[in-house]
Amino acid sequence: MSARSVMPAATLSSALAVLGVVALALAGCTATTVPMADDLSPTPSASQGASASEPEVETGLPEGYVDVGHGTYVPADETAGCESPAYIHIGGMSAEVTGEIVDQGARDFASGTVGLDDEGAIVSYTVAPGDVPTVIGDRLCIYNGIMLATLNHTRDIHPDQVLRLDPDPTIAWVPYYNPNEAGEGFQQIPYQEAIEGMGRAADAGDVDTMRGIWNDSLKVMFTNPAVIDQIQKALDSGDLTVLGQMFS
Image (cartoon, rainbow, N blue to C red; front, side, top):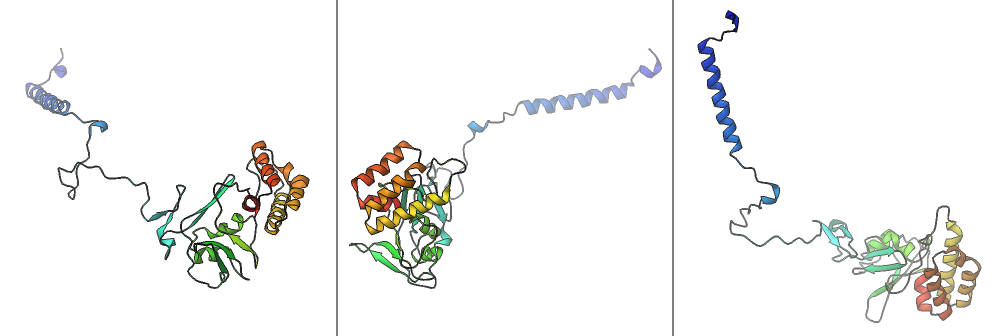
């Protein structure tokens, strides 16, 4: 062995000492058991105390929001003055208004008159010149007042129009913009014109005109047999309560 390959005794001792320290450190690390996530338990907060055992109740309601039904939440700070704001729900062949409609008084762009049922609940609103759906909604505590026109099967509201505010969720509501099953390239304008014609006839109590519009133009725009049958039965019965909800 050459002189350069011989390690001095002092150096060898130092190296062995270092290896011993490393071995002890590794032994200390392997002796500590890290708990898995499933083994961890929540630590009680100071306010709960160490003996607290009842879990916190999860309401599912986002902080600062109000539940308006159908799993819909709206910001509470946008419903000032309305403890339980109304909300227009439209989906498929149905329409419903949840919450409480409250008249907070006439104002610019919402100066029309409300209609009441026998129990004093607001069920309609007669549009005044210059009225705007969103402002009507603010007046009546309807969070999404912009949907008032669609709810009433029209693109724009107009003076003296009576807006229905109490659709019955158990009665079918025919979509205004297009049938649910409409495919790409559907002719929306002719469809809407036919729907509006059906609404005017329903308001006038003219079932014969409704049947004529249905048979001459509207029926062929639907492809779902169940929907066609539902509308046909309502027309055959001549029930204006049902037909009014469907189209007016």
